[in-house]
Length: 285
Image (cartoon, rainbow, N blue to C red; front, side, top):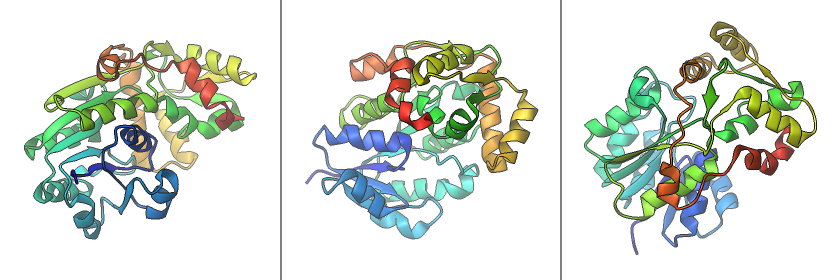
């Protein structure tokens, strides 16, 4: 039997799509996250389920055993990379993991203060074979992180100003990751993955308004107001701080680039923002 391809964070937005696309390749898949029963319910018996927690070394051995390739992502609540992620990366290398496809963010080389940069650096220092998928803003953040404000307040509350964002659908990221994990030729390469167009938030809310049949407003706070209000609404401070830094980078124009690297990897054009809103319409009703 061929070694399983490991997907860390299999219950997350991107991880689930990586598993789903790998399932179409016929490869052996090990899906790892903190809830084994949910993994089994979601993916069925064709996918091996593994209990994994970055902060619990007791979960490392069974997760990494026999694995040579893995998909890695940083959970949003983890900001101390040296303490909470490095031990698992070390364990993966000791277990024989060779290639890591890491979910990173676009423009990371200019954002050394963001946790993703520290993960990239650590993976390189560990001499692992890497493929970095540096992605633009996930469309699905709007039906997860920002779902409540859109559904209950009919607004998107982000400090981005007039800047444009090349929103990308996580279904496309999953497809790209599956290619990098299941085929040869992607080691040592980095990809800036974006959608097919760059939109400002007035354009994005206009598309949402048309699809949902009600007015969605773009609220454009300054960074300090955004941080304060996000924490007040219940988001942990460090998570809110990272969000603020990323949106500040977006405001400076770092997320408006549109590339064709997704099409290079997958052979098809990105899912459009309008199609995403249509597909996830029920999330905001």
